Length: 68
Image (cartoon, rainbow, N blue to C red; front, side, top):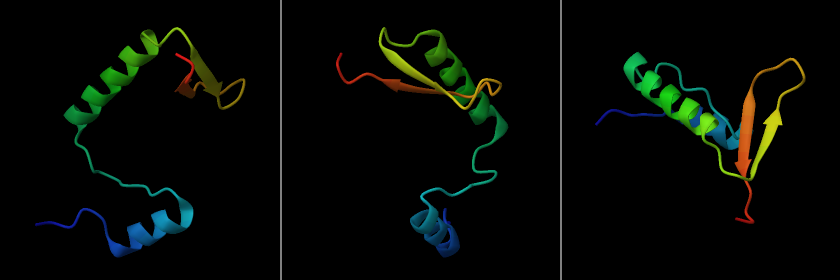
């Protein structure tokens, strides 16, 4: 069984709340994930909350409303 995360990566996550995992997924899998994200952005719920990183940054963060 191969180790997915090193002790250093786990410690980094516990300390910082985030860890960068390079080359975990291959290109075909990333394309599938990207397609799913695009589909979700095209078909959000009726009550999404959209957050942008700033006026010039095109990063989107969506949070579905808990009210329905």
